[in-house]
Length: 215
Image (cartoon, rainbow, N blue to C red):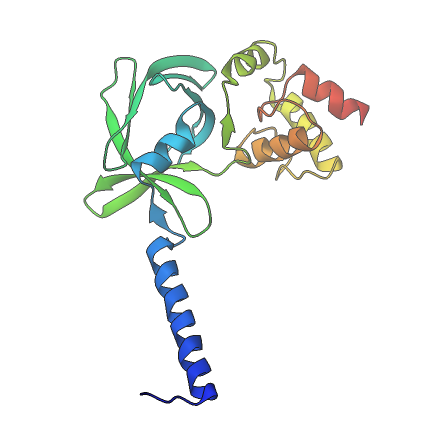
């Protein structure tokens, strides 16, 4: 009969406990930077209004991914429609109107930002980034967005610079006050809208102007 002293018994038990926990963690751990699988992609996009930016052109798009596989999108103040699907290997495929379908990989990168990648001669290249606050918002917010765009009076550089100035004064830095409504201005306004319980669009309109003027 094996006779173990108490200290040896507890040491063996402790080592067994540690290795058991490490083994369990190894089965569920995912690195911070990894490709999303099909279920994760569906959960991220389905029934969400998604704000994205093209890394090549800087174009911002706001899209609603319906659970029925249809897509409605606002880009450059114009509405487009299309369809989307997720393949078994996790690629998300998007076809807008008469354009050809394009399928892309979605990754969560080390900076905790989601990006969409395409294959190229140099391997995977990032093409779309989802870096704005509330880039994925549950539900269809596109109808409100179109109404906001239609009533937006702020189109000149002078008007936009005034909005930028008021945002900066309120503590939400839009970057240079230059009348150019770029990603930093949009993110500053999104943060302001979130903090003040306003519809989060990132676009200056009459409601935003009145709220900033009153505060």
